[in-house]
Image (tube, rainbow, N blue to C red; front, side, top):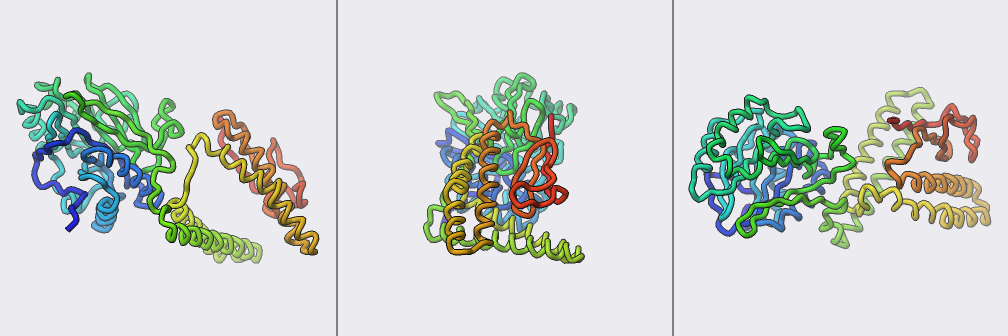
Length: 422
């Protein structure tokens, strides 16, 4: 029988001989167990597979039902490469203990200890604080990481436990403060490092949930999904943050049969998305808003299906490099493919196809130009972009033209996409 990778903790003190490193994944599932989020989690498990054990710093699931716990447990069993321990987050309610066992426990490795404390309800349990005191008092324990989900007060965010609650924690570790090498938490969908009460605080929430802005200093565009490695070498416990590449999980698309089926499925879902959108437009023009609304909703659903399947296939460039990486495809379309097919259609007297291809080629040329500008992410300054709903041509400027320069569609029908200025 295969050994269970997701550990159900049955005792409060666990001795782990031969363990010299631990990889930490923060907040994989609080925003849902969708394919994109779980792709990041899968990549995170691959990265922490380089360590002896893995710890998830809370929020494994969006809410604590058996359905979601079973999903994350089954996925972890397939993907994990080492034993995985859990820490309870504020989303990990309900049946948590049935799946993961004790909420307060200590992992005692040869040269360090990790004490896991439950503060998911924004307070530390007496059981956990008593355990912390017990572990810190052990002569054999010289280096301790205190791990919990919700941060203690710090210099970056207000979303933390109260000063009084932190005071309870400090009171417990005070007699052995020199043993406490790190405070570790999750909860915030980003990453920051601080010094609290003279102890390094590491906040990590980059294991699946979408990265969010923390402050003007810590923006989502500056932080990648990531894990944290704690490693003991020559008796000293250190840590290192490892960013996860956008293309962090490749396993499933390496199966040729599955890859082909995924590509076909993406095409089918996108075709359904397009068909439903077109029917919604027809219904709206015929004065049937409820039918139009239904088909817009169905189109959105099909798009999200396509996105999930494509997430398994996708091989994206790094975020900052992505705009420039799309330019060659646009250039190929307007310089060669669309013009070539348009000319074929003209020669064989297929005027509708000719019109569609030549109109799209003009738009793709503008796409390439805008993408080249956008490759300097911070300097891109176009705040209003207009799209002709008749032919798809893209225009910029302070105001939309009266008519589309490609098909002549009226400006009053243009879709306007406005980005917020500084």
